Length: 92
Image 1 (cartoon, rainbow, N blue to C red):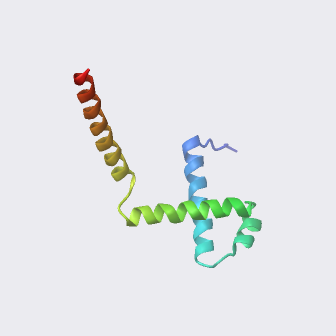
Image 2: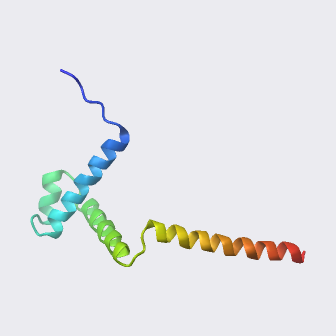
Image 3: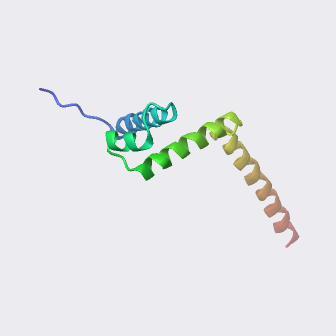
């Protein structure tokens, strides 16, 4: 019988999909936090963290603050700081 070799990325994404499924089952009311904790062998505190991260990610997406927007904001800030630094260097 052949053994299956999973890459780290594949395991991570599979695990991430399982987290999403668990959180969605809690949010839909299919499982309580305690039931999900027992059923999936995950601590109550961990489930709270997953739920909170899931909800924050959804909130950011609805506000239009995805990774691309955050990168653009950081690039703009970086550009402004470089300009200030160049001006200060010329003054010296």
